[in-house]
Amino acid sequence: MSDIEIARSVKLEHITKIAAKYGMTEDDIELYGKYKAKVSNEFIQKVQKEKDAKLVLVTAINPTPLGEGKTTVAIGLSDGLNRIGKKSVLALREPSLGPVFGVKGGATGGGHAQVAPMEDINLHFTGDIHAITSANNLLSAMIDNHIYYGNALGFKKVIWKRCVDLNDRALREVEIGLSKEKNMVPRPDGFDISVASEIMAIFCLSKDIEDLERRLGNIIVGYNNDDKPIFAKDLKAEGALTVLLKDAINPNIVQTLEHNLAVVHGGPFANIAHGCNSVIATKLALKLGDYVITEAGFGADLGAEKFVNVKCRKAGLKPTVAVCVATLKALKYHGGVKADVCSEENIEALAIGIENLKRHVENIKDRYGLMPIVAINRYQNDTEKELKFLEEELKKIGVELSLTEVWAKGGEGAIDLAEKVVKLAEGESKINFVYKDEESIKDKILKVAKEVYGAEGVEYTDNAIEEIEQIEKLGYGNYPVCIAKTQYSFSDDAKNLLCDKPFKITIKEAIVKNGAEFVVIKTGKIFTMPGLPRVPAAESIRIDDNGDIEGIF
Image (cartoon, rainbow, N blue to C red):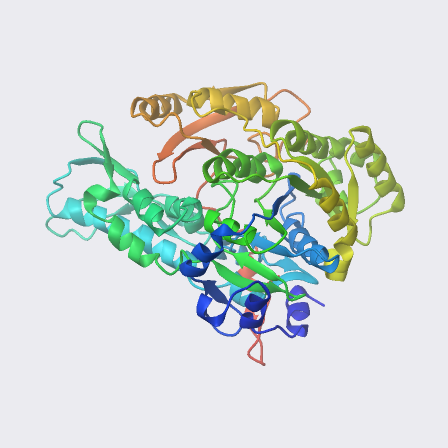
């Protein structure tokens, strides 16, 4: 059966019943149909006195284009923990419509390890991303309206972009203001995908609605004739933007197919943004169980690095264990085997590809200070010889391996992983940051490039050097860096899978996100507006004769 068929074969419990298991009454939640709800701020405040659960991060190696099943393993692990008598809660990101209609598909897990209702979550859900898109574009409209009526703030350069939550490369660079109206000022503009919007980052890093409004007001939207920043609050925009987000800011709750709680809220990409769900949702989940399983996008060089150096730094979170998800086919892919034959047994390629896994595990343990465990998302074609070889290689570096079969078996397929995570989580968290706040932006970039990516150095375009100097001159050099980089390689070249020769990271742009309170560093050929593949998933998505959606996977 397909993921969507498996999801439909399970009778879901009413969300009020799920909420009640975790201490929420009907007055504590706002229903969005039978199976989705938002948690009230009043309830969030009420549980603040409760002890925090143990926080477990699920990350991965550098993925293949279809991913490694990181979210599937996270869901299965939470179900597995509940099966062995531990009260576990999921804290996940919301899917973007870009991948759903693009190449990767949905982001609600797979097989018997899913959050549900999967069609709703993968599509419009409770409207959070639409609200973020509206807030982003209202700010754009207010900027151009201000310029239209005389430009009292003296905009010389507008840096704020519009956004849409779809993959549409044609919108990367556009020209606006072409209606030839008397006061219309044409100018270049562009679109980001909504999940790369600064408002998405602000949404996910704000601690409450007051903090949200403060951060929205601090967004730098452009520069004046004296090269001084112009803020959203100079346009008096922060109040209206907050109003658009007043419902969205409350976390969403849904359930796994095994009727356990999942808090699904916020959805920044990790290759072009910081890749973690909202701080509000994570902190709520920490008050509701014994264990919280969260995930950070793509490999541990991206999502996990930003989870530690951005999210944990800003929110004071202290994870203990990091599960690094891999598949044998991806390890062989990183060993130089073509995607169409990487399911075949190949110990030689596996031996080469394991270096990618070892590098991630080393980062988790030595750079981030977390206790690692490797979870192999097992496939039918995996051979015992390959699995034994991998286990022996990991033993050499003192890391345990757990074989998971959550796609086929749900929580039962993660019991071994759950038991090992519980044992590891008995240790004390010793989270490390790769760099210090007071270090220069260039020093922060260099540390991530050398210590996390394994690069021999960093090269800068003239444009990037000027932008970094300007950011530090304005007093924002103490912010963490959020590096936008390809997810497929430790390098900034998506085709350099082996990274077996010395490489450098090329920095082409630096943008301060003053509301989010970090600096985005663009590398290589990264775009903040993705494009569709030659054959997008959208071509196969339809409503069948029974009125059901098909084609979402």
